[in-house]
Every structure is written in C-alpha cells, then in structure tokens.
Image (cartoon, rainbow, N blue to C red; front, side):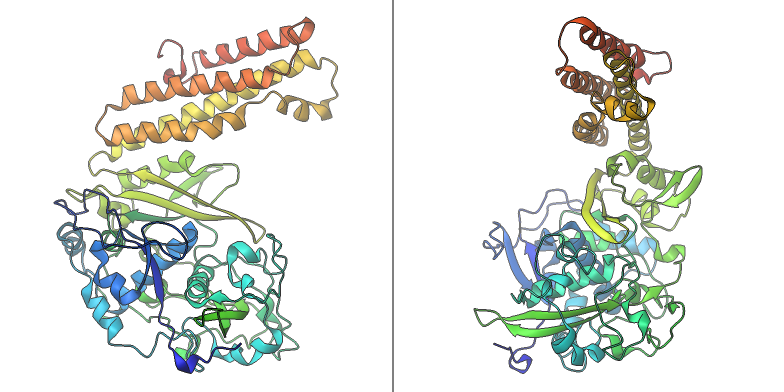
Length: 538
C-alpha cells in the first residue's frame, strides 16, 4: 500500500558501529567509552541505527559509520563532511586543524545546526525532497523502475541488472537504505546511458546521458581515526573563506543547477566551497514513497537520470588525490582490475614524504604529533561504465616514519613485481619443454598453464601488509624487507610447484619440471634481482 509522507518525515538515519572503539585516539590519551549498540537489523553485532544529529553529537563515542559497501561508507562520510562545513564547524587554518585533531574538538555545533533545521531533511517532501530533483516526481509512477536501479551493486549499467534482479521488482527498499544508496550514486555513479524514455517524458535527449560522478573514476583516500569524530576531523580540510559554499539539500534550491534544456555538450560548474563539493548531486533522482510490511517508510519506484557535471577541480578540492606514473606521465590513481591497491601504496607514501602540494591531506598528516591514523583507499572498479567490484585497502601511517614506509612500500612492490616476472620466465621454460613444437599463436595460453603469478599475488598482499605494519611499529626497514623477500620467494616457489604438479615425472615433462624450477631460482638469484629476494638474504 502507498505510504503517505505527511504522516512521518524521513530524517536521514545512519547505521553506526558503537564499539569497541579502537585504542589510541587521534589526539592521544584514553578514548571515551563506546556507545552501547544492540544487534542491528543487518544481523551484525555492535550495529545500531541512529539519527545524524545523534551521530554527530556522540561522534567520539561511536567507532564508525557503517555502510553495506566501502563506497557507501565513503559516501556517508562525504555527506557528513558537507554538513560540518555548512554548519561552520570546521578549522580555518592548518594550525587550527592540528588543534582540532589533537585536542578532539567536539562536533556538537554541527549537531545543533542540524537540529535547528528540522524541516529540510525529508526524503519524501513534495517540493524539496532531500537529495532529489522534484521536477521528476510527476514521472515516477509512469516511467519509474524498481528500487534496485538505485543501488550501484544491483543496477549494473542502469539497464541490465547483473545480479538478476528484475528491473521492475516491486519489493520496497527501506527509506534509510534508499537514502544511503542515493548518496553512493551521487558520489560514485558511472557514465552510461540511463534507462529513461526522455522523449516520452517530454525531456531533452541529453537526459539519458549519464556522466561519471566525482569519485566514480578515481581512488578516494580517507584518514581513519579510532572514532567517527576523529575520522571526520582528520579529513576536515581547513577552509578560511567567508562562505563554505552551498549545501546541496535538493535540486531546485539553486539557480545555477544544470537545466537539461541544452542539447549540446554537458553544462559544467565549479563548486563554490567544500560544503558544495562534498554534497554535489551527481545524479538527478526521484524516489516514490511506499510502505514496508512493518509500516515503516520505504521506496518502491525510482528514476535515475544525469546529474551535475563538475569542471576539472583545482588542488584545493583534491586534498587526497594520489598521483602515479603511467607511461612516464603523472595521472590520478584509478582502480585497476589487474593491479591491487597495495601495489600502488608507494605513491601514497610518496605523497606524504614529498608533500609537493604542501597544503593537502598528506602534508597535514605529516605534521601531527601523536596521531596514528590509517589511510583508507577506496574505488569502484568498472568496465565501460558497468560496475564490477569495490576495491579498498588500508595502510598504516605514523608521523615521522613516512620515509621508512615509503622505502618499504617502494622496494616491497619491486620485490613482488620481480618475483612475478620470474614466474613468467619459469612458465615459459616449462612451456618450451612440454610443447617444443607449439604454434606461436598457442604460446600464450600454453604458458599460462604453468604461470603461478595469480597465486603469488593472492598471497603477497598479506605479507606486504605485515611488512608495513612492522615498519610502522618501529622495526628497521632492511630486516622487514628481508623477511618480506623470503616470504615472496617461498610463495613464488610454491606457486610454480603447484602449477607443475600436473606434469608426469618422466621424459620431457620431468625435464620441464626440473628446468622450470631451476629457471625460477636462477632468476631470483640473478645479480639484477632485488637483494631481499636472493637466497643469501634469507
């Protein structure tokens, strides 16, 4: 049955992890006790649902906000940062930022600001629906589809649902889950064609063309503290402007919003401040209210169209950006299916050690005295606009040890890359002996039979993180690298042996087995090999 939004306003609700709060708060000293939290609806112990007001008021008694995916968690933190800026609850200088972090400045001013604006947070308001475009509401009944299209992980390319959920499946989505899914779309939505009959809706053709949202094609890095409050303060970049910008409550609140009347190139704009940046409406969305079986509000139909497109952002709006070299050119770090995030961590530590931009996230973190945050990297892996998987990883950071962490990550990555190349060489040797008369076109597939590189990468990440943790704990870099090299050598040897197990220990297959193992050992002990990989290092 339909749910009448007049009966109950839908205030944003967060799922939080109440505890245990990790020891060692950002500013030193003892952490406050964690807020008790019963087992939530997700069936996960320690989870509870609270209002945004309470989450900010008790931010130092809450471990973290909980999202069903890494991207959803990032989208929630982005939105909360936007709230803090809009409320004027932010540092204005780098010195003030350090004091906020070290002294754990309360975020209650932002909670009060939220509480003082009770009429603007309604997801189902007819004229100003939170995070949506009210002009689309009249089209939802006729042209809307099931709520699965709102969820990036369910909607795929907005046309074909890769998890086999039917496009028009009527099962409502709880209102709070729909709000969080909408925030994730605004932040990470991919560029494709929307399933919207623009002509039949009386809208211009560009309304079917979706642009990739602000975080949809790059890695977002956040500094994580022991509590939600610590995390927000760590990522709250100083802003000394008079106005932190427009908080994007709803589509129609600002005149410069994209109009979709033009049929040519996308209209673009530059954020007017950090409150605007963190709450950009990357999608034009409309949600239809419905009742859940328990009588709570939900969403049963949605429209998802193109949203705002931003200009290339200046450095002040790219505080966390990590740059890597590709073909000798510096580019922003993006998710890659063939390359795990830990293999790029040296670029992240280089950003801290070099501090070429000076006034960015990494420059500020390096100046802290007692903090020991984690650096959390998150991205959405996609193929031509079709989401595949979330990728994320965490890396330790200790002020004053960034040079050692950079050295360990750079040399550790080189060790793993060299071992992978050694496995490819050993596979080629095995292939030459097993298939001496193979056609050149068959070589690649035949060699892949003996290539243990996938098994190496599957196990190398754990060893890499153990090495970084050791360096972060104060252990010398050299011995930590030697231990890592020995572990990678053992992984490579085991991976090759497992690939060779299918060979008969007779004739040319026995020779292939022997020569492949010898090739691996020779390459690993070659003078050009990284020292930690050599037998002498072990």
